[in-house]
Image 1: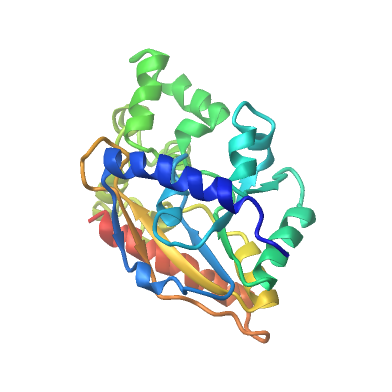
Image 2: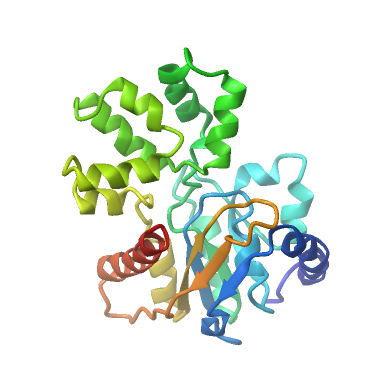
Length: 276
């Protein structure tokens, strides 16, 4: 199978990628872990719309990213098509998307995937954003609230933990309102106060991983290269970084649950240590 859209992908990579590098000045660590040939799956955490840019700019290989089908119906649909993305219907178990990705891997190509299945971003989830705003609406305008949430890259997974603590009377509404813009640091203080466990904090850093990554790797012999994105997307702040972790292979007799947990814990551990 011919690798589709490579010309369009390459043009966009160097034109838009150059601007991205100049604006954000990200650091790329351990890119030598990415094999130069053979089937590979690059997978990592997903909190920002631009997350796919970092793996793409880390390798000379073309990455076919699995992206939600809504991107192919909007005003930027042509961009996603010419970049070789694979549309995924997240409302169903999309076998068509999975089979297309498997076909690319069997041809020895590279796939990009987010094992969380969606962006772990409160800002990107309008219903959840509106739910949280109901708690703070007497203290801040909706516009400023959204701006603060976006700037701090507040995670849905951590907000859900904070909500559960409020609902179980482990924190007060005032504490909830005060700390909603800095959830990560607040949860760390709750660990020191023994209000939540270290494990609860760890599990708040990522959404649960779906099995598509390990399943496709097992079926195709693809090497999985996990990565962790840390820092913020801010102009020239120099704290945005992608770090590639040691590659993982999934044998035909390997337990997928164990491999999925392994990848989750490797990424989770790196993010946790980077947040210290």
